[in-house]
Image (cartoon, rainbow, N blue to C red; front, side):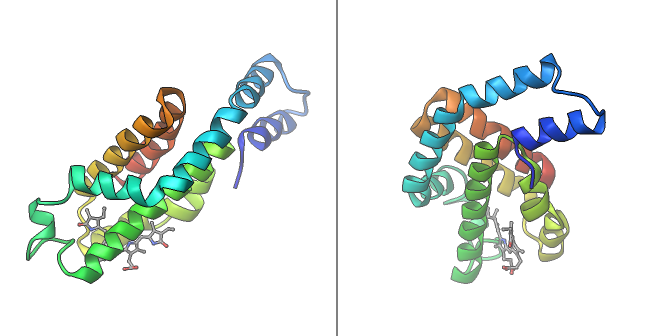
Length: 161
Ligand SMILES: CCC1=C(C)/C(=C/C2=NC(=C\c3[nH]c(/C=C4\NC(=O)[C@H](C)[C@H]4CC)c(C)c3CCC(=O)O)/C(CCC(=O)O)=C2C)NC1=O
C-alpha cells in the first residue's frame, strides 16, 4: 500500500531528484487537508452501519433485487451484500486517509469483478449502492471531505465497471 507521501517520494527517487515544485505542492495539499481527513474518518467510523443502511434503503431496497430471483434475495445473500458495502466504505476511508487509491487495487478490486461475474452479482446495482454511499457520506461529513471520499468511492465504482 502507498500513501500520498510515499507516492511523491517514490516518483522523485525514481528520477534521482529532490522533490520538485509540483511534488511539493502535492504534499502541501495533503498536509493542509490532514485534519479534515482525520475528522471525516472519525465521523464515518462512528456512523458506518447507519451510512450503509441508508444507502441501501435509497438504492436497493424494494427493488427486484431483494425479491425472489434477485441477487440479494435470501438472508445469506442480503448479508453478503451489506458486508461488501461495509468493505467499500471502510477501504475508501483508508484510501481517503492515505490520500492514495493503491490499497483499493490491492485489497478490494483485485479479482472482484471476476468474482461478481461468476456469482451473478449485478455490477450496475452495486455501483448504484456505492454512489448512494457517496451521497450519504457527503451529507454527513460535509462537502470538502465528501468530495475527497467521493474520489475513492468512484475509484471502486470504475474498478468494478
Ligand atoms: C475486502 C475485500 C472483499 C470484497 C470486496 C469481497 C467481496 C465478495 N462478495 C461476495 C459475494 C456476494 N456479494 C453480494 C453483493 C450484492 N448482491 C447484490 O445484488 C447487490 C447489488 C450487492 C451488494 C451491493 C452477494 C449477494 C454475494 C453472495 C453471492 C452468492 O454467494 O450467491 C464474494 C464471494 C464470497 C462470499 O460470498 O463471501 C466476495 C469475495 N470479499 C472480500 O474479501
